[in-house]
Structure formats: structure tokens, C-alpha cells
Length: 345
Ligand code: 1HN
Image 1: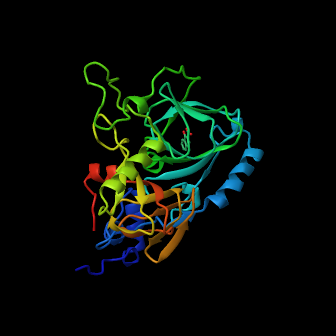
Image 2: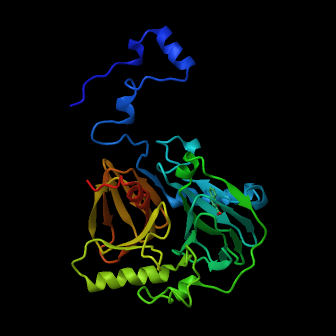
Image 3: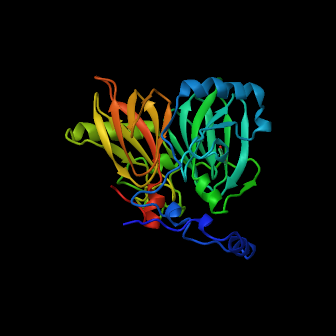
């Protein structure tokens, strides 16, 4: 049972002033705020960012701001519950939509926050990560984990857009966020997605392994989609047709802080997801999904993105009676699990 605790105003002003002058604060007036009963207070609000709203504004940014003046030309998907200036989708997740125009180059740098890109639109762009040149195709997931050099270029003819997902809010909060600029990388002939394309059959440890923390950097959508279709076909009773993007050498999450997944909803399927402690981001790769988060309902059209706070149940419904829907999902599961605060309610 929680009872009322003393308030700051209950204390004499001269005592409060004296505490402050010595950099001291009484705990009891703030105790319930930092430790609320039963469920955490969340700033994260369920928020929907339709791509049809973002796209023209992002193309306008392409006219207004040359790449040299931006380095990364991004519109940040900011959660109003946190305040837009904080540029966070949830406590640990940053989201941005990035535009690269034909011929442009976003120069090489590395930084402590981990990033991934989910390719949304266009062909001809590439990201070179740690010397590996990764082609960018719609639905591909490309990792730029902590500390690895990365740069983006575009040899095609149409705008290319991708969704950036970073753990920047957390790393910044930890006072551990910084970057280093570098020169154009030398591309080495290596393609992790080919060596590791066949799940159970991986390069042998002694001979072929690169002994890198991140052996696979590009996860082609064609492979993730095929894995989902196989699962759905072979397990007709399976509700959650979902795959996790993992490190193929360890089976662990592919990055340290955020988790990444692809999900298939069968035609007309409704999928309830239990309330779990981590916040969740959903991005529609193909089809249309109705997303219900507490009292709110969003309809995700192709390339739309939304987020939901932790400790909240989510219900997904594929709106098509005859086509599957495919979603990309990002969440804070590895972070919560490593810190021991992960819960399913
Ligand atoms: C970054 O390095 C990229 O490399 C995109 O494309 C977005 C947002 C915050 C900090 C670093 C990129 C970023 C970022």
C-alpha cells in the first residue's frame, strides 16, 4: 500500500535553501515520481508518422539544403511525449527518414551509437560499412554498429530514402555519444550476406571467420521475406510469424542495444502482442496493417512508421483479406534483457 509522503512545500524555506546550497535534495517529495506504483510512467506516446506526410517534406529538404550543409539529410521522427527537440521516438530509440539524391555522397564517419538503416524507396544507393559496400534495396536492413566507419553514396537516377534507427537517446543520456570524421573508405571485396545466407551453414571458425564482432552487415529483404513465407507455409497454426535479425555466428541479437525483427501477418490475420517492458517501433514494408495501441488505432500504409510505449499491449490486424502484410519491427529488448528489467506482463 502506498501512503501520502511529505511534500517539498511542507519543509521550511530556510531549510530547503540550506539543503540546496550544499547540493542536497530530500528524496521523499520525489520518491513516488521516480518509483511509481505498479507500472512506470512513460513519456513515450503512441505516434504514427505516415510516409505520405514525410515524403514531400523530405524531398523539399533536398531542394532547400544541399548535402554538404547537412552531412546527413534527415527528418527526425520525434515523439511529442518526449518533446520534439529531444529527437527521440522512445527512451532508447531514435528514428529518422534520410534522403540521398542521385550523385550525392554522405561522407564517412563513425560514432558510438549503433545504427541500422531500413531501405524505404529507390535504387542505386549504397552504404559502405567497415569497408563492405552494401547495396540498398527496398526492405534491406543494413547495420552500422558502434565504432564502424560508414558512408553513403548514390549511383542511381531517382531519390533514395531510408529509415535510420539508432540507440542515440540512450547513448547520449549515458554521456557516451561522439563521432569521428574520416576519409573515403577503401572497399574490400567481402559480402557477409553471401557467406552467411544459409542460416545453419556458416563459415568454419578456424579457417574462414573474419573474427569480427559484426560478421553480417546487410540482411537482404528477399531472404527475410522468404524465411517468413517458409515459416507461414510450414506451420499453418503458428500465430506470430516472426524472424529476428541475429548475428549468424552467435545467434544473439545483431546489435547490442536494440532488437530488430521482420513479421508477416497472414491475410486477414489479427495478432495480439502482449504488453512487454520495451518500447516498440513498427514500419510497414508491404501491405496495410491496423495497429491498436491502448485507445489509439493507426492504419499503417506502405512505408508508414509508428511507435508504442513499453508496458502496453499492441494488436496488429492485416487489412487485406487475400494478401500477406510484412512489417519491420525495432524494440529495446536486448537492452532490457541485458539490464535485467525485461518483462512480459
Ligand atoms: C548518422 O550517422 C546517420 O550515418 C544517420 O546516416 C542519422 C542520426 C544521429 C547521429 C548519427 C548516418 C544519424 C546519424
